[in-house]
Image (tube, rainbow, N blue to C red; front, side):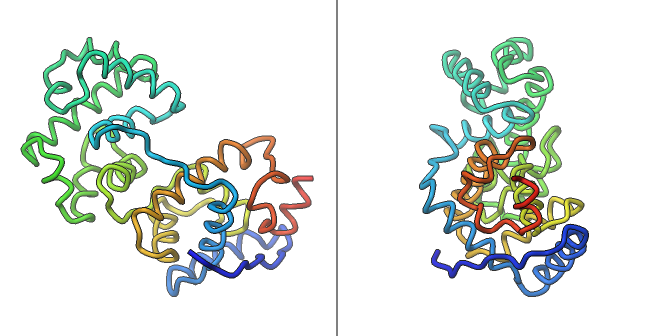
Length: 253
């Protein structure tokens, strides 16, 4: 999406929290954060397509969304490879396999017993509510399906939205710790906002496109891992460097 670059007005550090709160309030009312579109353009130009989410099938994407909770993607890849070798990457297979075998196969992803319960809970939901059909499930209107997913054991907002967006092409933006960190450091959020408030911030200030939401979230993950780290951020090398408020810019030097 084309946009004119807008550098946020520098703000004194002591006023950043209140300024962020006011900006969010205005955005909720009238879509007042053109920076989000500008940031997307800058990231896309600098880093290009991310080809995310990796997965051969919609069900594999869903499995990955559950397994990636509290672990790195490299660990998820090992767990999914084990499931693939065991021919267990289908709802029917996950439902039929024993809990102990499933737990052992996904051990590389960490919290493997908890995650085995979550996978079992999802396939049970899929059978009961949608006759094991992902096509039927994803035909459910977004708000209703999101509510259903949030009712499944172990599936929270980020996981539900990852399933909706990446496996189902529903118009929801996935919010994670990387997105929050970038917004806070750029003075666009205070850090106390709810998950849904931040999600609406993106959804109301960007064109309604599942492809754009997909790519934007993937780019945010790339920046969060490589530049906007929790400690020792590499702001000088980041494509969003030019948009840092002056107080944050000086602090990172």
